[in-house]
Image 1 (tube, rainbow, N blue to C red):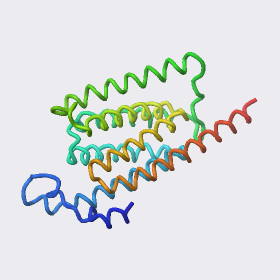
Image 2 (tube, rainbow, N blue to C red; image 1 turned 180 degrees about the vertical axis):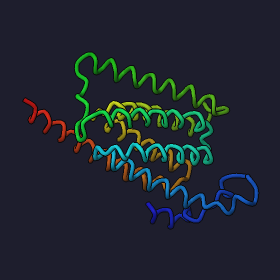
Image 3 (cartoon, rainbow, N blue to C red; image 1 turned 90 degrees about the vertical axis):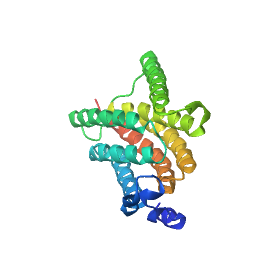
Length: 222
């Protein structure tokens, strides 16, 4: 990730290069801050993938920084959407603190599973569309608008599933990270390109880890 940022010149990019906030902005190391935030995000995701609640705490910090960076890079709705992610992380922390470490919530089954999953997905996408529509002017005509709508909708779904401590979240994270990789390429945020390639791999590893732990727990239970 750092290598990609250095090779592209993104590491030395300043806030003045992405905003029109005056001469003082050239002293703000925007590229360096973005890379630092990416490192925090990777650490958060890695810990969450290992069922460590510290990952959710770091996720709160990451949500604040990511929302700010996304807004500066053109995601006008970030000021509306990221606070929602912040709130979901708070619920995730509370749920994980009340649950047994290294034990996921029992998966939903039957009709309840499909009802919850489909409803959650539809509501997440509808909320994502509505909030992004508020933050974008002529959003229908901009490819980035639709990428952001899909990405945030998937993120909402996955974050809620994380707050419920369900293993199925990692399947959504896999798809979400692929969409985010496309968004990073469109925005030119090269620090995020390397980050989301790593995330795709991490989502698969976390899915395997959570699935194996769940299977082990079922065997140990009388």
